[in-house]
Length: 366
Length: 80
Image (cartoon, rainbow over all chains, first blue to last red; front, side, top):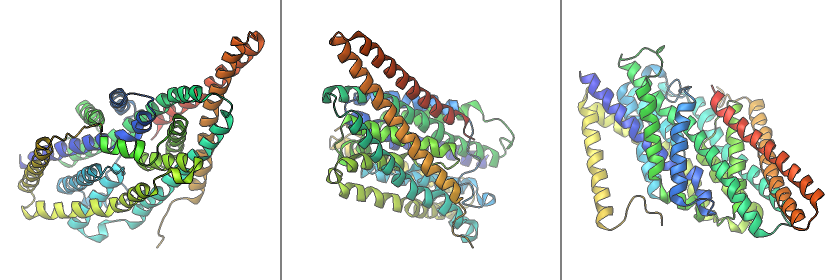
């Protein structure tokens, strides 16, 4: 009975992470389209939410384990998963608050690494796995996307040089609707799977399912719904950073960033080397801007984003480890997760209450 | 102990195929824009033959672009 309580707290926390994942990553698909007026903001996030929802059903190749190859699977318990999720949610909310795009996958890996470290020590952590799955992709994604989008926009400007600017803008706005849709669908097929994997593993760890079972429909529907709702609510602070604070872009630059970014993500995925959507689109936006004029990119904002990327894993790990320390203080039962969950809900309610009292909302488009 | 175990060949493959795919997609759509515009101009100038030829090129470029997008969706659906 007590294990079931922990299980359902983990399920709720995983869905909360899924919501923040959608909320945090809305910008990846819609920021450039909104910035170049290819789509109205509410239309863009609605389309992204629908495609994220659909994407979650299209591919059910659920991630086999959380942080596979990075932590020892035998050391993963429900409490470790809970603490890891809290670390990831914390980092997603913090970076949203500062309007900084960062990888939700890396935050989740960081959270689980931290909680596993606190639970089982350094022997449970595979450093090579961290280098392979976080550091190398983290270095490669933005640089590759920067170069691809940079070359792309130079070619575009050369090819359409003799056309009327109004024709060029109108045409590339249409192109952005296609590439933005591709991004949203890709996000749904990738990121909702992570939550499905967490929920499935939690059910297996608790003895409710066996590893050979098919993934239950309620897991697919709840993960798809959580990521779609998060996407619909939209992390407007990050949308603003990506859409206009890094670079004031024209529709051709927006298309080069989204088209080049989508090509990088899908090609890397096809080669079995998944890259962070957030890091790819951020690098692509910078590349599309710098290729036209280096000074067009606000390098101070870009620098802040890179700092957030560097801090993602250690910060989420630190919170994951701290959370595990707190929950394990209350023993192996449900008391720890209940205390932490209630404390976090109260903190969130207070923060939201303050924002409402001061007239600010979470979804302000400005 | 090795610091990383990622295959260098795989990384190189990701780099060149990404570059190729990114350039392919952006160039194709740019050609759609150029040929569509030229076709419209030719029709306005009563140059029927050129208009049809440019329209055919625009359709061919759009078909290739759609094929590339379709292949991207196929990759999403077939990933393991």
